[in-house]
Image 1: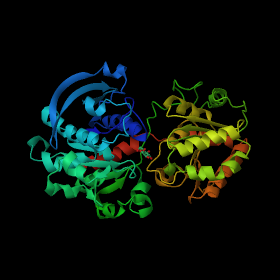
Image 2: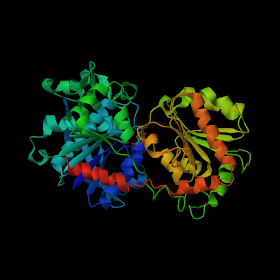
Image 3: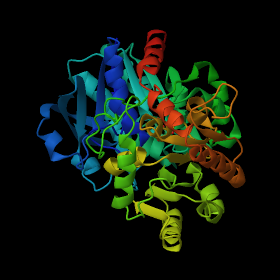
Image 4: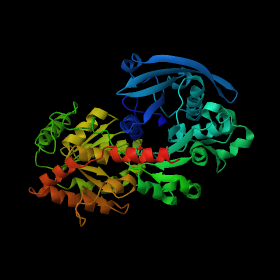
Length: 471
Ligand code: GLC
């Protein structure tokens, strides 16, 4: 089974969020199951020189995109047994950031077309192209409109994974023709509500749709979560399923992680306290070994539940605890957390940025991890928190509902959950967690239990294999 995994980011080369974790770890897990999985990414200028030096040039060709002919170079390297391809075009990818430009639609339409064009030019014939999020959503569309007549691509299967339905690649309808170059008869494939909607195109044209947790697969059929795609998805629900993401347990391992101060594991968790002390010092917080340290690591956007946090922040800060937040995003939340740090200098620290190494010290040093998302397709941080022995407090939605069960549920659990998107329900869950923290006998057992949770890719990779084999 040969799979080409197409994504707009993947660890360790380029990351802005959870997609990079998945694209950086699922392919290796599939290879363990005897699949051959290769990954294809844009060659952004921000990919570090140390990786570029290892890349080998393969070939180049022109990519037809509407009335344009655009150069595309192909580079490759093998990282931990997985072959990665990088598609080079400086006009599109020599930029400071990876997303956020007026022509993102054109940039990723180019990438999507170039992935298929590459297969015409190189000696490689995958059985399945696995596409991820709107940036690669035009692949199944271009495949069916342009490439089915190429014998080599005639029978390739396509899978499309939704990591977050909120970002759909939605542009003026003119983009369908002028930018994507779709002939008039095919423009209806991407037309949605009068716009050009790339994710809608993939939902129409791919053979299987997956999303990153079973609960989210159900949620996106409802208006509250579906961001206007719910009706379309309902009509395609025969090809929709949810597979919970795993995490890279080799990289995220408190026993070996070079980014943390002291190593530990379930058998010997003592080192966690050392990490807590070091983190308090690094952030300039009072050294308080016995005060619960509550962490958030998140993009600062509204669906992460930040409005709830904002609403009860003063009540939260009235508790005997310390609160640390790492993340960046919308200015209103950045400003809010800055203000809270000024208001509670002994208790609150906010680090504005996306800093993966520091995130690991947050997971290792904190006692509690807060993730009150309004919607959460899967969420990886709650699993990473557990991996480092930190107890998550989450709203039971999407992948959070599929990975965290409440400590007080009849069979016991691995965290604290609340159901409604309600600030005081969140506060109630935090207070229950603080209650457990106060119980000096039971708390260490909770930490040990967390350290023993298994969120490796093993099971999920098997489910993907099953899916590929039964298209
Ligand atoms: C997106 C989702 C997140 C998920 C990740 C990886 O970032 O918002 O919930 O864990 O993709 O699939």
